[in-house]
Length: 516
Ligand SMILES: Cc1ncc(COP(=O)(O)O)c(C=O)c1O
Image 1 (cartoon, rainbow, N blue to C red):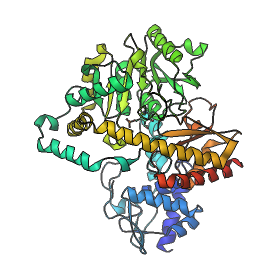
Image 2: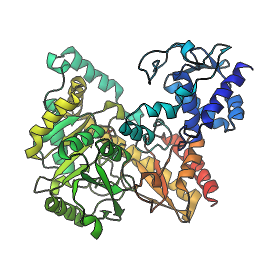
Image 3: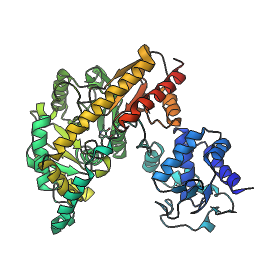
Image 4: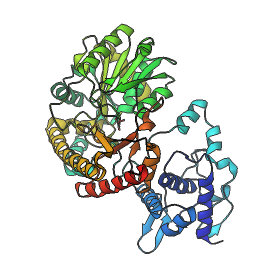
């Protein structure tokens, strides 16, 4: 058997396992199969992978699927390539440890392909399902239903910002300045609540642009919304407590609450936002998680009446409202919307923001605005549970905001995203005409396309992924049976030159998938 055949054989065997990422697209499954072969040292450093054409034929998938999977593996450092010579497993890998055992493994311990040497396939104990058995029930639940995409940087991935606008040189200067003057305090764990000048800058920003009622003491810097949600769940709810979540809902909120053993109670979303029914009102939530400025994923803006109702309800039920204001900076028409927190007169709202969308996701800086009576508890909770840090980044960010660069950057992004959004809407409308409705495009980084006829949006998203277009199916975000189906399409990341091209490609996929 040639090396090419042996590698194809290994990957086909992996892909044939019924429990091998059954819900992911072909592209991601191919990526996962190669990646797991590398991590399990079945494919060793230096091994030449089959050509994309040979692999596509061998696996029975489109060549583009293999090319896109290779590109992702290359971006993450698992493989290298040189023109005319082929694709090889990288000499040093991003993760060269056995995740299961936590220590490096030798190729003798595993069946491996190294250069042109081929030994046996991995034994059964390496299969994904057996790895799962080593986990706690909670661990099994969490890993089996993992919802986050590893393929974030792809055309139309919802939520990805356009990194090309980020002022790298300026940021480098600000970081250098911090390092030149680095005070020992900046190198220690973060102080209670985060770097004071950053908290102060956030107060000024939130008061003016989001009508948030806030003093410095109420601001707690976190490493983003995930951590903010986790802290709220840990500090404000007990195991088994009820959390109301919007249905459809942001997958990460759902995952964090599940990991804290809260019971999720989905509440339908209508044209005015979260819409509890009479039977929902009989339940006793401890937390109510909402995205009022731009409901994730539908894009609905919560009406004033609904905001008032929710605040009254939280007071009556002694519940906390968690307001996730993740992308409110990007509103393309009309006045910016005020926050729900700004209407709260009883201190029932915990407000959360993030720099993931305005700067870049990897910065991992977000913040909470907690009611005055919770400030000490949150600082203690953060310090004890999460051990905050990244003070040098917080210091550079404080300068970035205080020197006016943040406001300029947002203005620039808003303009750029507004133009891309318009182009995408125009392209989709001209190719799909009255066959779809487009909504949620007034703000944020994605829009929602829904179909006039009954369409399986999950299959459609998978079809799009095979062309390298990372749209998401609306029905995947529902906890109960989906009542709407559609595709979430992010337009921020794609370059303006390419947006019409990818838009046409997507329209073709939609036409093919919906027989429109
Ligand atoms: C609804 C929602 N909230 C928050 C975030 C940001 O989370 P983080 O700050 O952890 O990056 C996202 C990212 O996509 C989101 O969609």
